Image 1: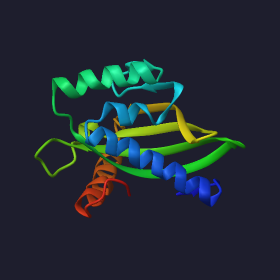
Image 2: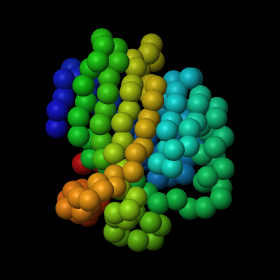
Image 3: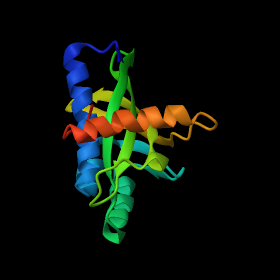
Image 4: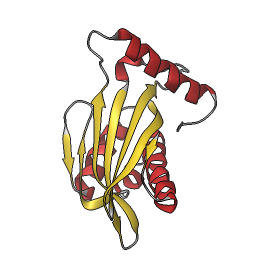
Amino acid sequence: METSAKLPDEKAIRAIYTRLLESWNNNSAADFANLFSGDGNIVGFDGSQMNGRAQIEEELTQIFIDHKVASYVGIIKGIRAVAPDVFILRAVAGMIPPGKTHIMPERNAVQGMVLKKEKDGFAIALYQNTPARFDGRPELSKQMTKELQEVFDNGKIIG
């Protein structure tokens, strides 16, 4: 994993990403939204966009009310500083359907976050969740699925 973040910052950034996935897995729209800056943004797996903490919470609440979502498992691939108080986290993620024990390869994603250090700690400024289709390269999809499945099989949500 690449990392250029100072150790205390890296631990805090890893914790934010972990809390993001846990909030989703627990169907907690408020906890998820509260990880973002007031004007934070999301670009979802399907290209949908949410802007601002209030809209993030409102839209996720509707998603969680309508159906039981699959749970995330993720692997952080890198954390780096791009400015003194701005960091980028890169990760890959897979999803486990409710009541199941296997990653759905078609839902694998590459995730990116831009985080900024605020007076009370880190906040997510941008979270993007991009399908990991690997067009024409099925071996990459199989490898990602295998790595994510190992994280899940070890009883973790973050590798």
